[in-house]
Image (cartoon, rainbow, N blue to C red; front, side, top):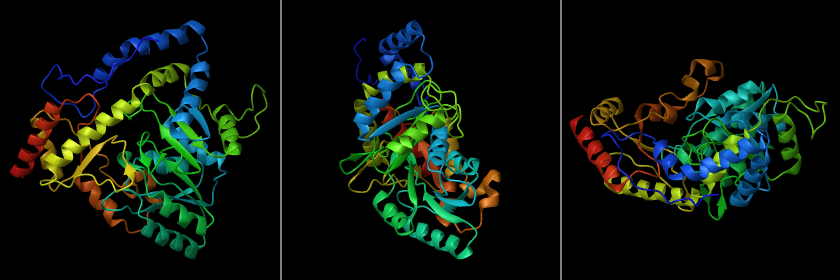
Length: 387
């Protein structure tokens, strides 16, 4: 394959700074990606071709997970993992109230009930203290069986897995990590993918490690779970047999997407380093005007999304848009505020509701130049001063 280059910190062709910019990365990696895609076109194994197995092995080596199974999307990764864990109707799965809809949607899709847990105001991740309260409430009600906890590594920061695992163990529950945003993050000397007994991640194009379509993976320490995941992703079949051994899905990762991911994996650590440098520059420039992200000691964030908290958020966002700065809202609704999940509402989730009105994502990708970061900082300061 052609050699890859480290990030080129080029200025965009126009004046606007986008929230994400995949085209600069594409130009930087174009030769290697094209060569890998051409190899797939040449051998013609478009479903579960050799690149998929190579990707799984390299991700296992990178993360430290014993087993990696590539699947069709991050949402499918969550759903397949829950199915492999035998989560079913009548089970309660505890999820953070402040995250993307796919987290709760995957739980509901297997017939189980998501129970919303409030988040820590500093990290925005699941609050272990409120998890304890939520479990006690479910146990007291006696209508659902507390079965699993599904923390989310929001914006790329690993959740508090030691505290959550201790709580889950006391109540006889499993832990499934939703690491859709955190590939490349770490807790101590352990990387995301090996922080929980089973992990689901996403390779959506804007993720730190993203393909050119939908993609995901399930990572686990348990061979029996890995075997079930492989069956479920291919209609429940085992190996090349025709018999469906379990209920399954069409959940395989396309070989072309695996080829793209293999090219991006070659420069992944370099890109993560650039993301962390950008986050540090933002933190230094903005800490006196907005609430910047918190990364507790011992944790490393993948900085998938750089999110600040600011009063008068919508006014600030409008001024940034006028200044040519792309922004995003991750997320403008807590999960219990979505119409699709109102049947699961019922707990006080004050922090999640407050965050939904305050969070604002700023441009973050490894090809941002220092000059562009400084321009964003100056624009944020001006926008906040005008409100």
